[in-house]
Length: 438
Image (cartoon, rainbow, N blue to C red):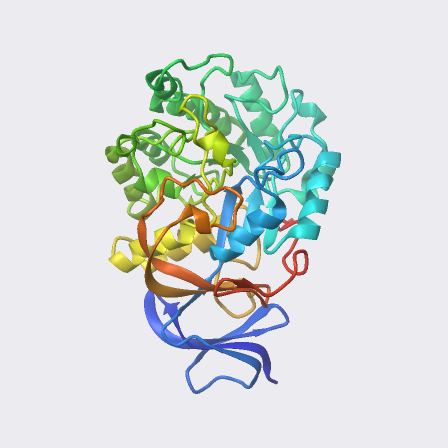
């Protein structure tokens, strides 16, 4: 039987090493990985000589905005950015306008994604002030619950140890991860200077918040996932409490590769939450990702804002940066430099995120898995925000040289993006919502 699509003569990773192989796709699944010359017949063939055939990246931390913030990003522009960046699955955070605290608002997001998507889209939900009021009908449509101790989604909520325990119990009861934005900064406190901002959202604050949730995790044995770890001290705390089944963590490329001292902070180009830290933290986080496996995956924390929201003074600017089009190029550049192994890259950008959220059939380039694939060229180029498909164009990586360019992105067997062109209409491919295995 011929396969639907054959990616021929490309470079795939076999047991951690580069090897020339061909990949067959049929009915949205990977039919097989073949030695060159042993491939089946194919209805369509793409010559991938000299190009890398890899699993599409899975980004479990993105803010796709839309609804009340469609001036910043929409499901169409955000998922186009994902496809152009080699990301085939994204999971959207609940701190949107409106926040996702109930089924009606969640279904509003799902409806938008169904119409406008270019890749697979999953969702998280927040937890209302009274945890007992959590709308359990959302559970089949979400991959986790997210908490923001420094900025609760439900007004009037205070994150005491009792509240943390209630949230941890709720997630454990339903066998679903609790995602933590680790920050104990009081919401009412305002920063008057850059130093105030950095002190308010310090590493001490990050560690304090995580310690509280670790203490309650131990009581109920729930699954805690720590978002955007930014400090070496936080990574050490995670290492001391390491337990893959109940404690996982992520890091962003900007916290891996950028430090606060590298920017003047005259505007908000490099304003993040958590903030950029020191070169020491960069090193500690990279070690936690690649040497000790303290950190399980890389996530972009794609947080798009309008140009006028980023180019004002630092304190007035919004925090966050677009990352869907830079994560894969940045991480693969480190692979090509020899700083990261292929095994590590595939773990923390592809299979690891799928494992954390219990997403079956994605993140591995092997027979029977979903044909979510990116074809990458080893090519020198520079990151330019003006070229992004995201509505957000301001990036702290502006002008940074990279040596990996996503060329072709395939979602469940469909070629979505090919060398700058989108070959499908929005809403035609991709799973919405992505669901966990029950």
